Image (cartoon, rainbow, N blue to C red; front, top):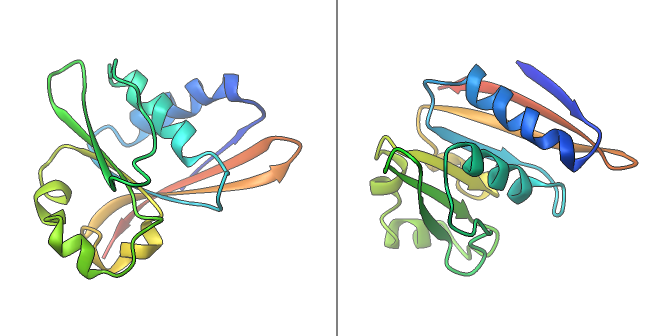
Length: 142
């Protein structure tokens, strides 16, 4: 498990770099944390490191946004907060995204936990107070 303490937004660049270096061969990242803890903000930083020049924002209503990294590959960003039921993920064809081999960043992963791939990186974000965040990341293999 990797644990990183981040005292302010300026340090998020180092958090993103550490995650991408530590899990260099992984492409599926599931984010867990309370509303407003910084899931989208971290994903923005990770996408910037991957060369995304598009506006990275939470796909709260569209459920998925697609970005293009500097290598020309698609990057998928999900937000399942407004998911009414698991059937909605089937309707959107989640398998095509989740098993594409491209980067997938999933917010509100607990809503689709039973559909996550057999191997993924779980990132828990906890607010410690005074703007300090703790990031805990580990590879999950089921």
